[in-house]
Every structure is written in C-alpha cells, then in structure tokens.
Image (spheres, rainbow, N blue to C red):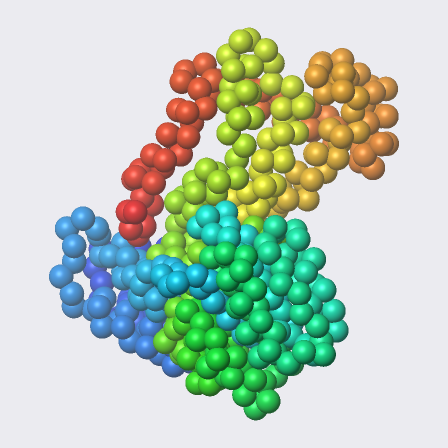
Length: 458
C-alpha cells in the first residue's frame, strides 16, 4: 500500500535526518523532493501546496527539541503534517441512536460499494457486537440485489429482500419497518451507483437521505482513482452532506493520493480502508498509523490488534504445550502457521506494518512474497499424513513424488524442509523460556522500543 509514495518520502527524509542544523536551504531542497513525491502520488495540488507551506513554516527557524537532532525533528514535522492532512484521529461510526441505526451507502458504480456493505456488516457484528440487517435499493444494476443477498449470507447478516420493480424509497421505508421487527441494531442501505455523477442519481440518493434521516451517510470510493476520488467525494458531499468516506481497494493503491486528499478537499473524515477482497478486509482509518506506514515506520498497533483477533489462540496454546512436552514441531504445525499468516492478510500485509521493512534490499523483499508461502502450503498438502508428522523420512524418491504432486521442483521441496527445520529450532527456543505468552509480550514491547531516526514514539 502506497509503496511509491513511501519509497520516495523515506529516501528524501533519510537524506536530511543526519543534518546537524536545519537551514532554509537544506529544508527547501528536501521539500522540493517531498513536493514531487506528493504530486507523483496524485495528491491534489491545493493539498500539496498547503502541506509544503505548513512543513516549511514549522521547520525553519524553530527551536529544536532536545530529544531529537534537527534532521529527526524535520521527519517528526513531516509525520505530524501527514497526520493533520488526513484528519488527526480515527473517526468512529456514530451508532448512538434508537435502533435500527441507519447507515446509507453511496458511491459510483464499480467502486466496491456493495462489497463494502458486506464488509461493514461483518465488522459491526464481530467488533461492535451489533445485529445487522442489510437491504439493496439498487433496482438498476442487474443482479445487484442477488449479489448483496449472497454476500449477506457469507457474513451472516440479516438480508431484507427487495425487487427491481419496487421504487428505491419504498424499499428503504419497508426495510426500516422490517429491521425494527427483527430487532436489528443497524440497518445498512445499499444504493444505486452510476458510471459518473449525474443529477438523477443525486436526486434519488438525496430523497433517500431526506426520508431515512440516516445517522451515517458513507461515500465509498476507489482509492486507485487518486485525487479524482477526492473530487468525486466533494461532488457527493455537496449534494448529500456525507458523514464520512470509505476508501475501497486501498491495498492496490501504490500512490496514496486519495488518502492524502479526501479530508482536505471534502472536510469529511476517512472512516475505513478496504484492504482486500475478503469480507474481513476492512480496517478503521487511523491517520497517525497510516502516516507511520507511509514513512516506513510500520504500524505495530494494528498488527498486534489483528493477531489478537485472527490468530487461533487454542491452536497456539496446543502447539506450545506440545513442544513443551518434548514433541517436535512437525509439518502439520507448519501448515497451521501458514494458514494463520494467510488469515492476517499474508506476509506482504504483515511486513507492511513492521518498522523499517521498506528499507530491506529489493531482492530480499521479492523473496518474501505471498505466492511463495502458498506454494509451501501446496507442497505440504502433497505429502502423506505420515510424512507431515515425521518429515525426516522424506527421502529422494518421496521428494520427487511430492514435487510432481505439487507442480514444483525437488529444490522447492528441499527449501521447504530446510525452512521447516529453522522454524522447528525457533519454536523450541520460544517455548523453552516462557512460552507463547512471552512472545506476545515481546511483540507488545516492540511499540515502546527505541525508534529509528525520526520515528515518533507511540
């Protein structure tokens, strides 16, 4: 996420972080590079100008903090201005109303609106412990209603039926009555999108908003459209009075222009980031955490929160007890670890949140791709249960059979077995002195360890 912007900014800031004094000359030189990085990231021009002016004003001639050298102070200023540009703090959904609390979803066709409805339903059910109902008022797009019905089933949200021969307003009003009967805490209303902003669409959504008086009206926009996302959000906000924005497909946005432009142009907070195709791939938007990720400082808080939610604690405890009893970490255990990693979004998602990972050599980064870990899982699946439990019995002929069955080569099998041996040794060390609990405490402590140059402490 935002790889291009992150690489450019970290390179620029690294060049100034060792300076013993901030002068107008070296600050201006660094800001020229920052300006180019932001423009290449498709950040809106007024936002770039304001950002550069604010950083320059704060950096030149100020009293330097005793805790940081001048170069590090400059990085801190840039981080702070990124946070300010994106909205200072997380803006949570306002669900303080008599149920069902109505959430109205708006957006252009193809932005990922209906998928986001399902993701939001799952988020509210799992993290806010709400009973959620969903309804589609999109009577124009073929199969839109069926799509939402299918997605609602996947996330176990209550689906309120509708049909294409009904008026959108009639659907919405009937859905409110039905949600009350079902004692739903939240009703999410999916509306029709268009390929472009047009008067008919705005009039229809405006009438829905006026009739329903939703507590939240969220605009879903494709993050990969850059500053166009912010301009489209502004057009919707002028007609609808949005309460927030959801940046869909943010995991595929290498630039970051939308995230840095939306708040400044619309005045509305980004509330969520869509971070993948899975129904749990919706993250609350924290400006400070994203600013740290953009500057290569990682985001350990989000990583730890994901681990607490998605790691199977019973499996982890069983594995710890197994190794403490002197039994070996076998390939079945290794396969479980690969699955746990996939549940957390894969290795690329995890590394994106770890400090300094973008400074690894490109060759090393290329080796840590999710495809490699998927291949490892396929190789293990091609083994017999006995081979997974006792990998030492895997000889040359068995390796050839496993490679053929998994569509790989014998060197790939050898590489997997070597990595398993290394993991086996590591697991033994971890469980010897304090178990998995100590490992998790160590992860928590990483938040407070000495930060790299320019990284503000959490």
